[in-house]
Length: 505
Image 1: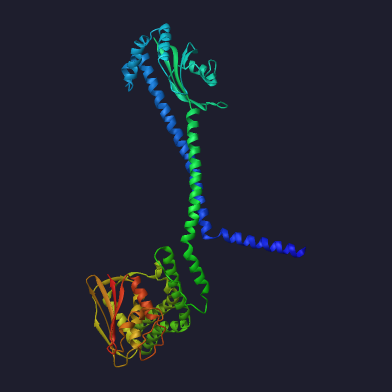
Image 2 (image 1 turned 180 degrees about the vertical axis):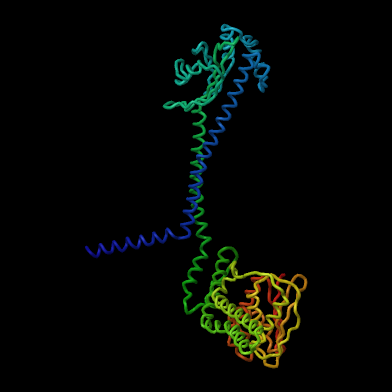
């Protein structure tokens, strides 16, 4: 008994697990999304459609009722004939020709009765429309004769209309009745300054609105059928579209921490192919990140060695003159600040596009170039040369650009001998400023000139092994690109290399 119970519980848990997984399938979620979208659309559309039809029905009823009332006004009053711009002239003339009692406006009670008789006798109201004549506060006659209970002879509406002293229009909602509501226009008839009667055009809305509701029901039925058809088609279509994801999932499961070489085959075009390509690119970056971790400490040492060397060299050469001490102290403080920023750069290199990456200021290119040249000479014993100094101002991050150019100078010292030339210079030409570092060292092979700017890359042809991590040139490129500039390299094996930073003014 206990084993059977446990077996049942196991089956229930497995079923619940499968059902939960099914509910989270992309295919199922797409289907539910369609249901939700259609459901929300129907919830909003159906009432809006119904209200729109109601509004159009009311507008049409008011318009038709107003046209009939204008005809009545023009017939019953000479003043109305002069003031009302009647758009129903043909209907008015037709009634006059059809019944002699309508040839002239009534001037007494007896004539008004004859006028009502003639007017109502020549009218054929549309369904649910009632023309009602009231005299001396009572019901007199109507067309058609059969009226709903709310419009009976002694109803409250009839009695209220009979007492009117001025024109009135509106809508009365009738509760507990099958007429819905009554839209009406009421016009008192004034003869010789005395109200002799009231003419009312009333129309019930139940019939019109029942037609609207029937149209809405048809739309709901058609919409529900279309929804079912769309959901069936969406289920099969989504299964076909998402089929490539199963291959992607299987490949991803086969990738382990020790094997990062597997890639997903990219087939065709579209979002799935783009997802596969993006996944492969992510794996390439992940593999590079794993490899770079091994050299991280060496990278940090490479970046920090340059400012330490500059500070050490200038402190050793510092003389006793106050001005020289002051200049050396300023340079040392500047390098200490740059060293602090270098530590942060190692962490924030991946966040180059952050708005606070650069601290822009305007500075002289000539002073900046001479300052860089003075700092670079402390990097090592070389044949240092200042080839050219640009004249003008530039907007940029002085510290970041110092870091970039000094990294280039540091690289030049690593791949040159004491007798080699390392030349620095700057020039402003055609709206751009160029800074360059040229050396006569080992040079870089043509095939390596693009790869050296990748993070942690080193020149493969070098006869000596750099103690750095290969992060320096990637930092230089990041700083230059943050200034909307570019860096180029021109080199031949055995003839040195020239790195040029090109920035917009």
